[in-house]
Length: 335
Image (cartoon, rainbow, N blue to C red; front, side, top):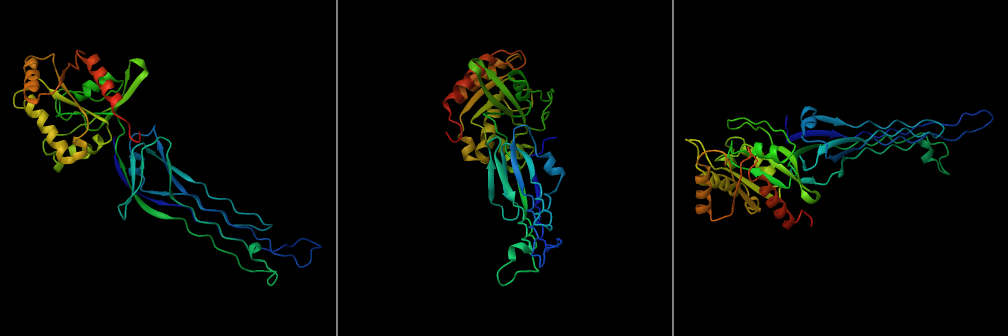
């Protein structure tokens, strides 16, 4: 199951209390204080992990707590510190303060680590309070409490290329032909219920990550269908590959109208998203009247159209090459 949003409560460990103790060895008159300090509480970290694909673990476990520090002991023994808790999240996770809404970190780099709740400090034992005027202090500090906060996690997929198009345009089939991904494929709309990622290999050891973005239909930016849930995932991509059914069945939008529906939704959702570079692909050349749809696209849009058949493989080498060339001209974030 693909889960891309979750709200959790994190509770760092409390610091252990300091110890009140005095030396009691034989033949040592007036033994002084020897109470040790308490251990610090465990902190909680978020770690961006490339091996994690969804926020499912966070959605199923609402509260995450690190262990408390142990109290100090006699003979100046310090208490053991609590173990830190590391929560693994997918790369591309946006971390927000759930109560105030501001962004704490956008975790876009693999291995990126964020301390989200700091453990409490251990209390000082009575040894630390000995002085020339008080050689037998009978007080120590309690540990301080660990930080607690509610955070909201929102995942936006990290992909170089985002596949968009109306349902049943052939996005999942194309992803399965260009990569080793195995999305669910069937001859009816809304087969894909979650974004799928695949790595596409190109000559010259060049590779890129492609994401199949499902559920975008007319009105998606207003919450119609599934599109509002998945439009945000296109924002991370550097290049849009717009798949159009060149041979739509009767009762569904024609090729030109289908293209314009998706472009309208992208513009309505985000002006920045609409500015992303785009490659237009006319799919299903293996079907009757597909050539007619390709000609209509070229005539109406006055743009380069790449005809393919994701089923037979026709035109896929050209498409792969076109995508690789376009990505080579588009800088990555931070470059």
